[in-house]
Amino acid sequence: MDKDLFGLCPFATTQRLIQGKWAILIMHHLSNGPIRFNELQRRMPKMTHATLSSQLKQLEEEGLISRTAYSEMPLRVEYALTPIGEKFEPVLTSIQDFGKEYIEYMNQK
Image 1 (cartoon, one colour):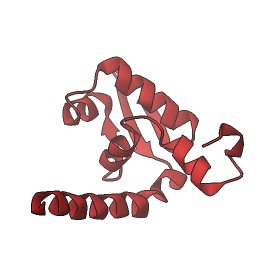
Image 2 (image 1 turned 120 degrees about the horizontal axis):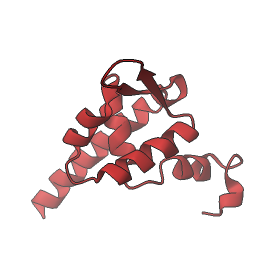
Image 3 (image 1 turned 180 degrees about the vertical axis):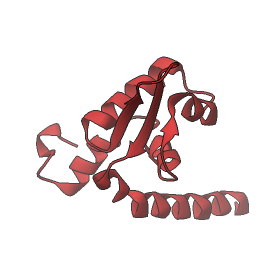
């Protein structure tokens, strides 16, 4: 879709917000509550540190997730869905339901 439609077309806007390869999976993990960076990376072992960091920054810039750094030693950083990010949870549930149905469809072929 044309990037000029961002902010005008709901489909183009949503597509751009979740355009990263891992965005939906990251948001799924965060939908269960705040997670530290290393725990998130353990849950997604095929993702490199740099890729996760980049994807988190993008989601944070878009306002879908928040980053909280605690002044502790060692430094503790947690990521969580923002209020607007939490509104994406029904979409995640729909994606999960469709994925399960599609897996079943594939297994029946």
